[in-house]
Image 1: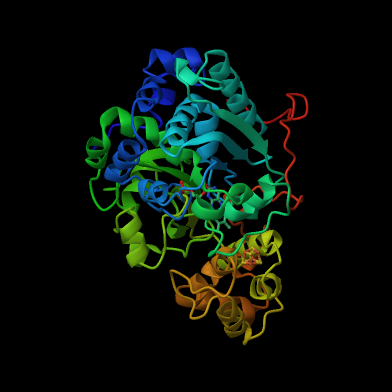
Image 2: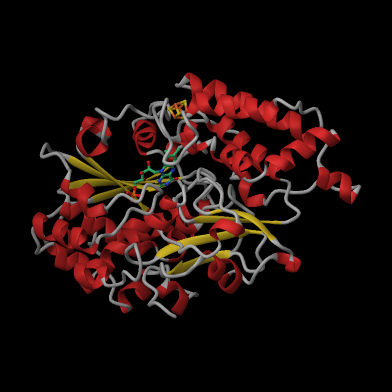
Length: 472
Ligand SMILES: Cc1cc2nc3c(=O)[nH]c(=O)nc-3n(C[C@H](O)[C@H](O)[C@H](O)COP(=O)(O)O)c2cc1C
Ligand code: SF4
């Protein structure tokens, strides 16, 4: 079965210059932005609603519905979320590096639809190359008259500003991002009342959308909302980008239809497990998502609804695969440590709870675990997210705290025996078996893990500052 590539088509067909404005225009680029200038807000929002495009930043909220919620007060702003710090997620990076004009055209259309004249792209600070490519693309668009005063010869003004974060995961949460853009600490705001569509940037109506969401917009206009919706094959719409990582033979970004099963994704697309080992578990949607295991989930469909029914989520499309040699205690500790480090500290259950969970997991991992420790972990997790269920119950301002309990749900439901063996043996059974190296969790679980917290730098590093960033 095949599906037409949408957002990765150009970069797949023209890998050497898909990021340039020349290639973008030679492949139909900016035609839809010109068209959008002749359309009304209702028509544009209507197309996107019809398309049923779901936001790609994690929450999968319908983009057209969000646009429809925009409060009437003006000015309104557009903010594109390119923070991409969920461990295992690396799709936005590719879209920014390889096809920045596609996102910029999506932004122009979105700005017109939502009557915004100023837009921001908030890019994570550890992405110097994507940031430079994006900045260069914006300059090209200004030079061609597609941004600035009177875009495309019309009377519509639009400016886009690139802003770099400073490496705080929490700044990916839309209200923390807005705080950070305003120069405040990157701390989430309470919803309600601070829904961005009503009280967003500078307390004005603001649309926040993800890079991949934006990159789909020109295609929706080009093919029409209905035709885009016809890309629906199973339960969701369009095609998602999946970042596949961990212990598979062929990790990478893949744009997929939703009719795939997890078995097909991991074994056909991903090439199966490294060294032909057994699959033990996988995370279906970024470190925040509850884990899946082969016995229960391998033949489920890779789709939003199917994931939700099975108690997890497709989230940011980050699939992290773990083989039979993975120590689940260590994998859980790695993820919980990440959330503990990234907690902004506003809510006591998140700030204290994640720290306790990290300490208990480390104790078990290092061989000093006690028989009560798994129950203690569950108890502490219950204090953060009552009932340890999915979607999580909230005791906190934002979902970061409840996300940290996902690995504990996996230990409770599938790997209780493995935790017990750690306690009984006084150490990691994998390490004791191999006698030398400690069993490793996939490196993609580490996140980028920067040591800098909060705030933003606002400036794009030069080539020299970001030397060694990798090739395109
Ligand atoms: C802790 C946390 C981190 C998040 N990080 C990101 C991120 O890095 N990128 C992103 O697009 N959305 C992220 N989100 C989701 C955003 O809050 C928001 O839902 C999204 O940017 C909206 O865009 P969309 O509707 O196009 O998905 C995060 C949410 C939470 C709770
Ligand atoms: S849940 Fe954690 S990260 Fe979110 S606002 Fe509360 S303390 Fe901050």
